[in-house]
Image 1 (tube, rainbow, N blue to C red):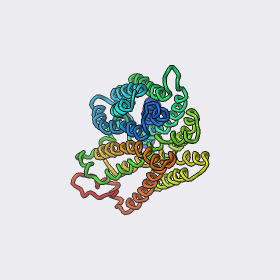
Image 2: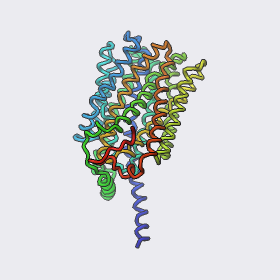
Image 3: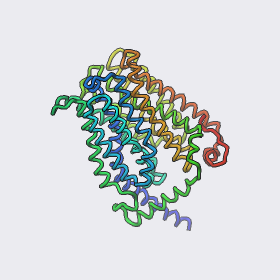
Image 4: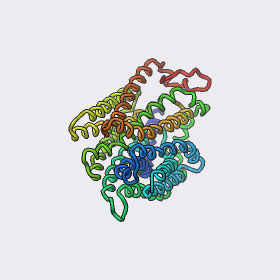
Length: 454
């Protein structure tokens, strides 16, 4: 009888894997496209700046402040946007996000002065708010826990790919300066905003609201998927007060760490085109040189998730990658030859992208149930302030030091902090009783709050 049960489980498992792969191929290309466009929408200001500062008579500091208002709008409206997605449906809300941010990004190309640009950047951030958490929520409707990590990893690859394609096209678009009477910086915003409006129609056409509305699934497949998703929901249900995240020191610690990752990422995205321009590169050359390190990051991200199996490996890897990136960025500020500086920057840049899957593995091991959802949302929301800080800090450091390249000390210091943090978490994790981590007792109502991260 036992043998028979075992034999029956194997084909069910295989059929379940085939079903997951089919769902993956059906919805992930559209979601990865959305992720790519969201990243391009944040990186386009780094290229537009190369002409826009002079064109609108803005200083580097003024431009940095105006462009960084994107993150204030995103911060203010991320949670309301996520709540609206739960009420109205993730598919329709993602479509709304795409349409409004696409139209507003195109409008950026017709900014008449710095004040209009600043106002539109705030509105673009407000329009795009909630895009990432809504995408994660949509994935939970389709993928059980055993396949969700793979789905999120594929979604994450959209980030370096977005930076790679954004760099390639950003540089080329700058060289269209004067075409049809428009400046190169105007083409950057018009060409990066229009695809969002196109993807709006693809989301409405190809993304079902949920598995029960999917025409590409049979009734039996819908039942099989619903059963597995139901088991996950039952197993992870832990009642908790959402406001507990505000007094949970672990949430605030993770938020600080994530803020430093975001600061490093957007510091590089925003300022690297400026540094490469200083090497004497044309717009097209600038785009190609910036695209290379992001392409390398995408390749590494394809193989990294399979190694994220236990916390020690993740923390040691995170510390090693951060240290390597820190040394690369610091070295770039000391070298005398431009090609050497570029090599150091190109080697350090992928290290920042590799922080993301390492980092998000950790909260999933610490938090449980409903507390996990609210904790991760709080971490993501607070961490977005890193982008605001980066786009103001990079030009300030460059102005203070008199060197655009010197600003790369900012991501170097951030990565150094991340390396120390990873080693500190590793030491703290070792002294925690294993039973606490496995049972989730530290998260239950009324229990003693043992600090996993302090």
